[in-house]
Amino acid sequence: MVAIFTTPEEIDTVVLRHMETLFRYPGTNEEGQSSAKQIYQKELMIFDLVDLKKGWRRVIQTHKSPCWPSIATLLSACRGELLHRSLKELGRPLPSPNRRAWASFKREVYLKAASNGFSRTATDQALSTARDWIRTAIQN
Image 1 (cartoon, one colour):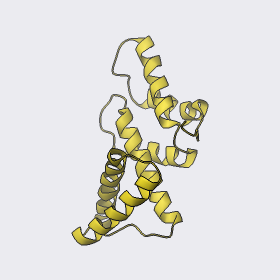
Image 2 (cartoon, rainbow, N blue to C red):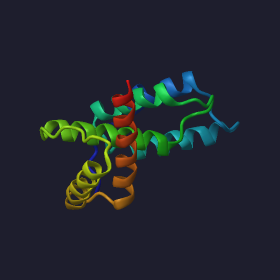
Image 3 (tube, rainbow, N blue to C red):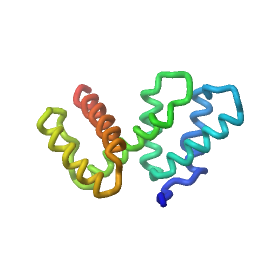
């Protein structure tokens, strides 16, 4: 059973209402839109409110399409925020993007993620997002 950290009402308030205002639903069917919203709620409820808000802000900053961002985009952003916050809480700085340091960091993250039940695919997506953010932060 998945622990619920964010309620459907919080997801609706933090993400879905704003998504409907800022972007257009890619379909024309209201029933389809309602079903899509339920899927977003179900998938996003695994994150706590802090990671959900920060992930949503990240999506707003980077999303270029006039249509709703995909659920994969939102999940990746929230996972990245969760990873960043987790490292910060552990007192572990974000790694430099050089190859050797990154490889060492990845091994550490994979071991930690596996021990906490995260899949390899989810961990790969979070690491990819984190590496992009690290590169962007270093360039700015």
